Image 1 (tube, one colour):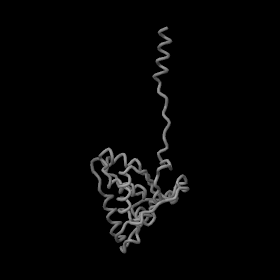
Image 2 (cartoon, rainbow, N blue to C red):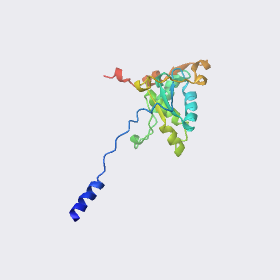
Image 3 (tube, rainbow, N blue to C red):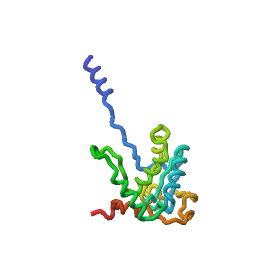
Image 4 (cartoon, helix red, strand yellow):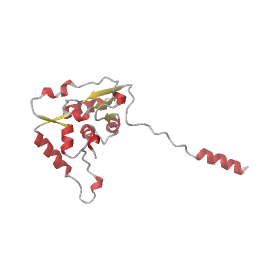
Length: 176
């Protein structure tokens, strides 16, 4: 009788593996899809950060087509000098400077959130940023932010895709 009891207890204590959630995309209901084409990065990031803090779920598509205002050479040299910042004793501990366009956009938005507080972390988890338009968001109509459009400024600008290529990012189609 004690052996049967042990078998039952062993079966109860064995944990079943959890099904992994696909975190690549957010469910389409209650989702705002924003097209970043020709939007100024800083203005886009501040609007998105405020909407995330209000509880919205946001997916940004075409992140590589967002722009940074300023002279091309000045923007590129600023980002290249940023890549040199690291710790000499343990560079694998950071700081991490991204080269991919979607990561640059996501990191910019994170800088405008109260990242170290629980509400900032929760807001950051409601954000997805994509290079191009993924097929699961192709049916959804994308919004744009008129206040952040590049036509609002007269200054020169550079796209994030061009910047990323200059600082060492190679798109998957161009890899050897």
